[in-house]
Every structure is written in structure tokens, then in C-alpha cells.
Length: 246
Image (cartoon, rainbow, N blue to C red; front, top):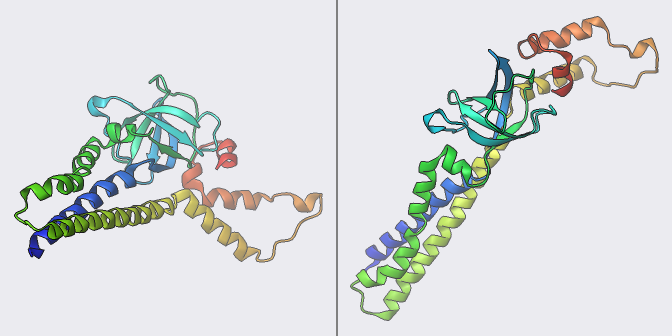
């Protein structure tokens, strides 16, 4: 019995299934965390926490959905044009520039289903679609190329390939879940700063209590200054609307 050929075909099924599914599962419905949305020279610029993967061939814009920004004019469908690996120019759904004073430091953007592969990573889609049929191609056509004459050995080869394909699927799902969870748990600079500021407040006042109505409930000017100094690189010259939304 040729254990070597059986092991090679099984390993081929496992690797092909694993790579094809990992590429699809790690990209499908992937959200990109927004670090900052600001105005610059009449354009609205979006900065993402990690590389957004938008290619935008020939400088054309692609369609994305933005949510969780805390700004009424920033949640919905837009078009974006690539500037660099982490920056995009935000445009209206008709492809027009946005000149309104929209600023925020939170939210997520995602591509429509399937379009995220066509617009952002066409090579990923092509590779996945090429590798996905490989295990089944080996299942159906492998016996035609095999020199094994025994039906028992042929059945054993089929079982090995099926088991390897199943293992590749399970491993791909686990790996994709780990990757997506680690991405989802990444904190933006604003989230990290807010966590540090909450810790700072707990250090100053470890046992907060409610205040009666009146002057004792007012916010002191030194507290406002402290807040501004803690977030000054994010607040910059932005209005109190930015503070309220973020």
C-alpha cells in the first residue's frame, strides 16, 4: 500500500482548503476601525487604525458603509478614494466631495458583501476561488491517476482526502476566528486615551458620590483645562460638538 501518495494527496487537500477558507473568512464582512475623520483643504479625510486594503484602481472611488461615528451626517453609505495605506478621502454616495465640518475619532467602515474582494482585494478572491475546488478535484479525479487496483485502498484514499479536507476547514475557521477577534479587540488611540483618563479620574476620586443640586455640582474651570490638556492633540481646534460625540 502506497502510504506516501495517500499522505501527499491528503496534505494537499488540507493545505488548499485551509488557505482558501482563511483568505475568505478573514476578509468577509471585515470592519476597519476609524481613528479620525477631519477636514483638510476642503476634503474629508478618514484615517483607519490598520491598513484598509482599498486599492481603487485608476484612482476611482469605491463604495463603503460607515457606522458608529456618533455623527448624524457620517453614518450611512459613502464612497472613498484611496490616499495611502491608512487614509481615504470620504465622498458622498454620488462620488461628490464632502465639505461640511464633519469630524470624529470613532466608528467603523466596511465594504458591501463580495464587493470588498472585488474593490479591495481582487487577488485574494481569485486565489480563494482557485484553491477551493482543488480538494474536490482530487476526490473525483485522483482515483483515475492512481495505480492502486484494490477497491479497499481506493476507498481508504478517499477517506484520507475527506478527513484532510474536513480538518483544513476546521483549522481555517479557528484561525479566522482568532484573527478577527484580535482585530476587534484592538483599541483606537481615542479608546486608549479614554481608558487612561477614566483610570486617572478613579485615582483622583476612587469613591465617587452623587452631588446635590447647586454650586457643588458645577464643573470647575481647572477640570475643563485638565480635560483639554489630556486630549489636546485630538481636540485641536474642534468645537464642543466633537467632545459631545466622542
